[in-house]
Length: 173
Image 1 (tube, rainbow, N blue to C red):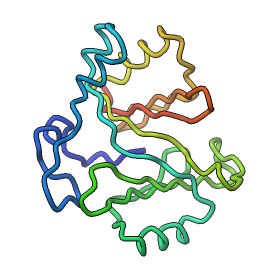
Image 2: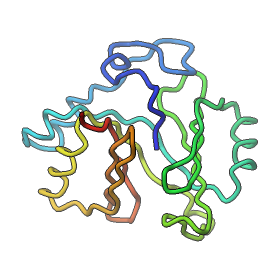
Image 3: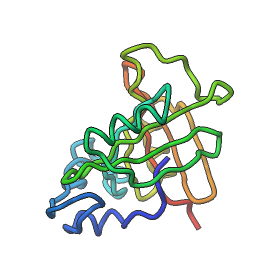
Image 4: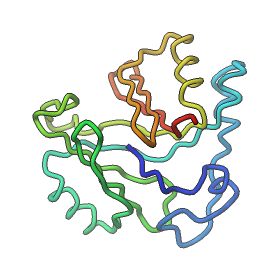
């Protein structure tokens, strides 16, 4: 889950500094990314921005110590509506963030972690989650989870190797 207090995607694309940046960096043009997906007017009208990669962790504090020693700084942290915990980390000068995720055994998203299976998901911010989900379904992408929280709308699909991809955005008014 992504923190809600982030600058809007269009401000970041315009060259504003993201947390942890020491120099301005231009974000990739998401319109080019969307047009590469095809000619669907829905996909072309929804803004998309790659924001972070999520890693599952067996021990959140141990992983947090490791990444902080490596140079990452804590940006935000919180609890997911379903009981998991997340910590967003930033690396000075980097645009994307790293999200550490911990799911207790009682969590519906808990899976035993084996070495090499810690990758959790890629996170993309989209301007209209419902429209994006409709287009994913039209294109026959599997919808593996749908979460609507008070301040966030989230849909997940999975790639052919089973890696989850999250599309998150604001809850419609």
